[in-house]
Length: 137
Image (cartoon, rainbow, N blue to C red; front, top):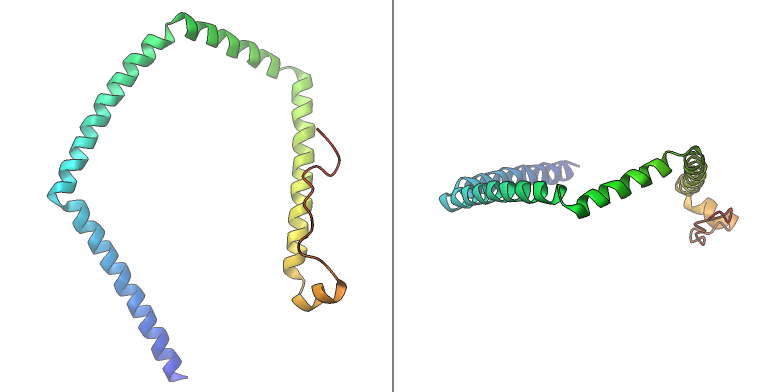
């Protein structure tokens, strides 16, 4: 029994030492001059990239293609706000959630059953999966 405790204590100590060593290695790598220089270069490059992307985004936002795309998105948005679409989405969402809950319940039941119960009752754990049991869609 004491040998088990000793092994557990040794294991705990080794994991603790590993954690401390990993922290120190990461700290040393982070604080190294080369690492600092690379971080500064990356920061500078990202700032330049941000300025360039902002300038290009402003240019593209005012282009005829962007205005046409904006109109298309607005039209799609209007169609999505239609009550029929909302009802269909709700119906499909309820159906999907029901299926998910049924499948989760099956998994829970399998996990809760003891291995002997599953073998004795002939329960199969490799049931074929039916993504659409109601034939919807």
